[in-house]
Every structure is written in C-alpha cells, then in structure tokens.
Image 1 (cartoon, one colour):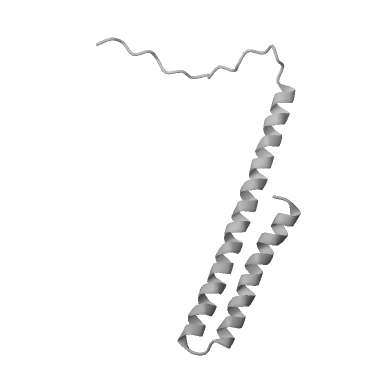
Image 2 (tube, one colour; image 1 turned 90 degrees about the horizontal axis):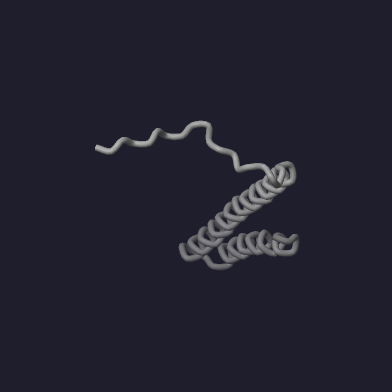
Length: 93
C-alpha cells in the first residue's frame, strides 16, 4: 500500500465520520441520529479494518525478508532437510 493510497483510505474514513457528524446536526430528530450513528460507525469500522490490513501487510513483508535471508544462507547443493521423526510404517493386517 503506497503512502498516497494510505492517506486516501484513512482520509476517506475520517471524511465519512465528519459527514456523519454534520448530517446528524443538520437533520433533526431520530433520522439525524440514525444517520450520524451509522456513518460514524462505518468510519470507525473502516479504520479498524485498515489497521488490521496494515498489520497483515507488515507481517507479509517480514515473512518475505525472513524467507529471502534463509535462501541466501542455505547452500544450493545441500539436500533438503529431513524430519527427525517419521511415523513407523504400518504393518499389513
């Protein structure tokens, strides 16, 4: 996610919250309260989703770095590592 996309996403969520607040004050009564509550809740939900998305992307980047580091340090002619424990073959009945 580029910086421009990040600013646009978080800015859109903040803008939605502001619009919800303004609509809540401009539209009187129960309808205004419902509009305000709905738009602000959607904005907060969007922010939570974006935060979790950022965390997932950072974990993916870290995993890629670890894999690349592991590949650099592993010799090319080395045999694949075997498991130390393997189940015993089952006897025929």
